[in-house]
Image 1: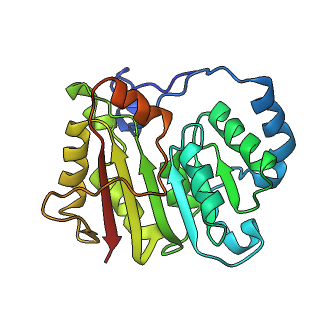
Image 2: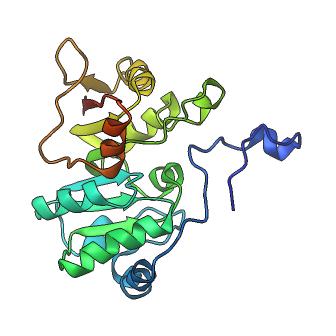
Length: 237
């Protein structure tokens, strides 16, 4: 199943359909990933309903919260959750094999501070997360939609920045990374002028790679292709 671009048909419904930043593809699900989903989703998975989550109930405690949007196979999210047991970590990823891979690592390492959602992040942020409920948001290597005609599909847009500003607590952090310079410039063009965010970098506008962000397979692929990597960090005013 694939998500259609809103310009792919001329029906009134299509003209008003929100342009999504992702395309659902039938990725290969390994037996281990499927088993992890079957066995661990009831404990660690969050089904989508358009109602605000009580995160204290979801995580069975009150703690600082981080979400990672589009976590891929969960390498960075797993490493962060393992290094920060004091943080509750919610991962949002539409591709179920990636969620299965994350849950495999969660189960094998007996982590209790991870939950995952397999749903559109825009709808999760809009309908399931309360205002000022999240201490940190990570968005690492989102799809760059590098062709100019597809830039409208990029996740980081003014309307999405508004959603982030709504859920991040005052003084909370937003961290991003991309291996496409044009997308890095696009992210900064959106976020540097947003009234809710302050860029924490020096005059370059970019940050060194933080030690707690591991080299993901996407980043390693970028290095092989000769791409640079641009890290950014913002604080919620």
